[in-house]
Length: 214
Image (cartoon, rainbow, N blue to C red; front, side):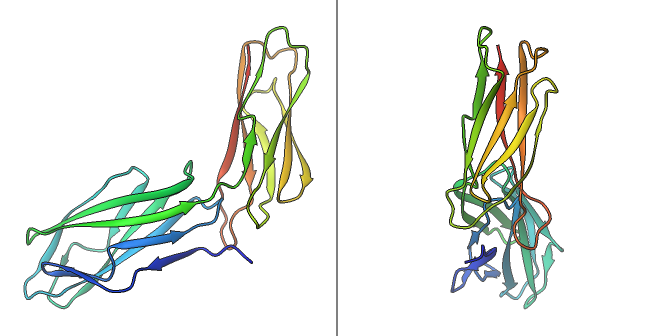
């Protein structure tokens, strides 16, 4: 079964003042490495007067709304597109966009999503004490999803703490081996792992863990 990236629409319609919305909630199904998704809220002016969307406010910096225009004549239809930035987010999400219109109505529109984690990383913080003689340490990355997700590359932010990606079971199990070079004293590094993009997309989430040499 392939991952499916889709936007689910709730059946039915809701009306507030002059605007009638097809749905007040959009449910997004997303891939574990997907970096953004789009929810589209469709509406029409069911009244007999011009209606202007005077303000569109989001409750999270991860949302970015877009309107082609703000004023709609009677019988005219439009769309409010809301881009949801999925980076650094996993688990259940419930985000609101609040729309106010010129006829005094206020509408709350919701995006629901359950963002699966692509990989569990252990440890998320790799440390060396000053008297620890170990030259290398290993982080284990495990994909608990049913579908494989390839890890493509790894990079360390500190040149004295280089990292190497090793495949244990492609798409499901990997190791990242970090080497502590002699120059790594009181050093910190962020190790970033590039993941495979979702089908049909060119960008993907980056995984990361941290290294600290005390």
